[in-house]
Image (cartoon, rainbow, N blue to C red; front, side, top):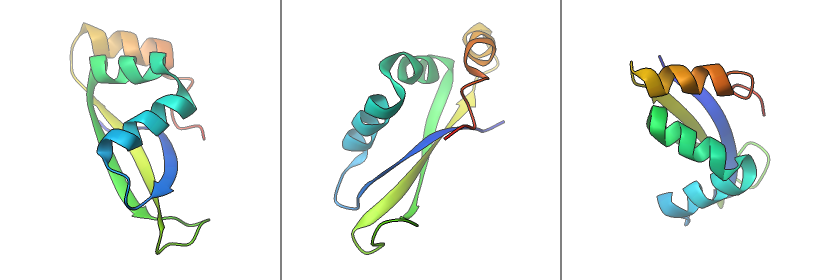
Length: 85
């Protein structure tokens, strides 16, 4: 099960490390740590719908929770926050 966690928009020249920094700035360190504890974070990149597409991209962040205790606690605590942005 893949859950949508949020999105950012940045330049195509920015690497994955900067994308994680921007996500943490927008959504907070606590959510970022909870996502990485609960499962695997994946990203989907495509042209920005609001900015010039030749220079900017939109990055959607998803989490695939493990089937463990950390994933259950993540869903209980953060379910209200997912799929909103």
